[in-house]
Amino acid sequence: MSDADSSADELVDIDFGHDGLVPAVAQDAETGEVLMLAFADREAVERTIESGTAHYYSRSREELWQKGKSSGHTQEIEEIRVDCDADAVLYIVEQEGGACHTGYHSCFHRKVTEGRPGAGDENTLPVETETVGEKVFDPDAVYDGEE
Image (cartoon, rainbow, N blue to C red; front, side, top):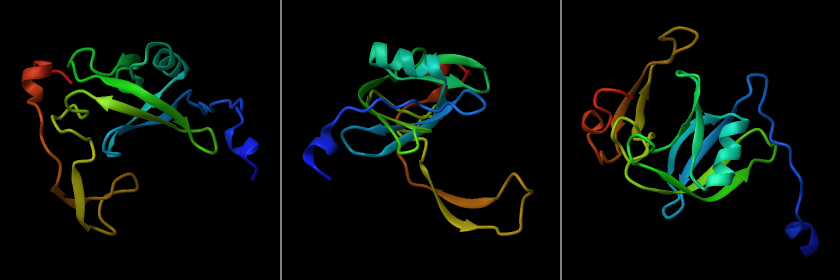
C-alpha cells in the first residue's frame, strides 16, 4: 500500500441496516476502555457530528437522546470511526462522570466467571459474573428513580 492509499479521503455510506440503526460503541479517549454499546440512527450520527457530543437512539423509548443531557455525564467526541463494513461506528470520547446508567464508569463492569451451557432459553444464557468496574455515582440521586 502506498502512502497515498493510506491517507486518501474516502466517501463511505454508513449502513443503518433494516431497522435504521447502527451499533455505536463509545471508547474512552484517554484509557482506551470500552464504555458502552448503544445504537444510533441517522439523526443521532448527524447530531453527533454537528455538535461534537454523543447522541444515540433509545430503542426502549424510541427516541433520540443526547448522552448526559439529564445526568450531566456527557461524552465529548474526540473522533468518530466507521468499521470496515460501514455497519458500526466507534465514538472515541472524553467521558465526564460515568457512562453507565447504573452508576459505573463503564457499562462493561461485569466479568463472566462461569457459563451455564444448556441453561436459559434460545434468547438467554445465564452466566455468573464478578463486578470488576468502579461505581462512580448514585443513579437514584442522578436520575431521581428514572433511567
